[in-house]
Length: 171
Picture (tube, helix red, strand yellow):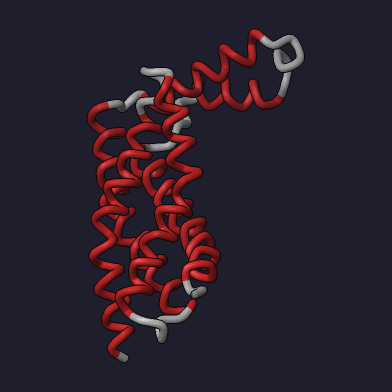
């Protein structure tokens, strides 16, 4: 029972570094069209996500002791990711709502222009849908984009947490 308390404490302690990590990733994604290196840095951070979570779980395992098993480490990872991404959700929403309100519109415009330059995509249904979204102003809100990112991060993070917990629980 004591190790469960240590695992929960570790989850809440690790939520702040996870919030910083996911917030930096989110800002790299939102501003990647302004500087070329940001998309590469975003991809590196995305690939390193499981390593970061593994290191957090491994630290928890060392502090809680060997009775801290896969289930406890999995819960630790899920809680850490959830708490960390709550801040990222709010930050991303504020950035998309107040700093870059035309972000999604700009991205769709760029996609439409790119597809129009490709002969095989000029008459594609994808281009038609994108153009219809732009013409009808049928764009997702900042809240919808932020909430979708939050949900996707938590679902993928909980699956990732299981695999990193399996590795972190080994001796």
